Amino acid sequence: MIRVLFLIVLLTTSHTIFSQPIQKTVYPVVISFHSECCGVPSDSSLRIFIDHFKKHYKIKRITADYIGPMGREGEYYLGFKLRELNKKQAGYFKTKVKKIKKLPGENGSLVVRLKMEIDPQSLPGRAASNKILF
Image (cartoon, rainbow, N blue to C red):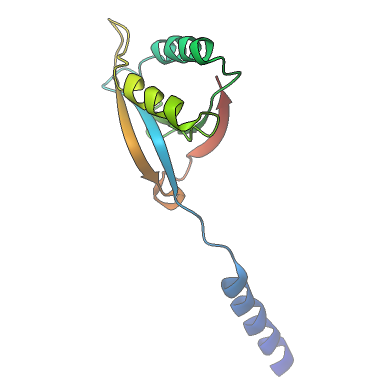
């Protein structure tokens, strides 16, 4: 009985000692898509910008982390780490992406944030992160 109790205590403490804490991620650029009653805006203006940016700088792809759903109406974040870009390109990307607006007549809002820290533990329970290639 004492051995079983000792084994349970040992397993419990070793799990808490050796488990890795979940890391917060700091994204240079995060675009959040918010709903205002009737869904989120499309990402087509963002896709147009990224296509133009890739063509201008001859970049094959830009990746982002899709983080969501954040709410009941499809709210989500797109977090860009910008690892594919050099320093000059990343600066240009940050400057130009702030000017992106949603298309006329769309519901919701599109907000660009720079240097946003995302803690996975503070996200809603059903939110997940997936890579998206642009």
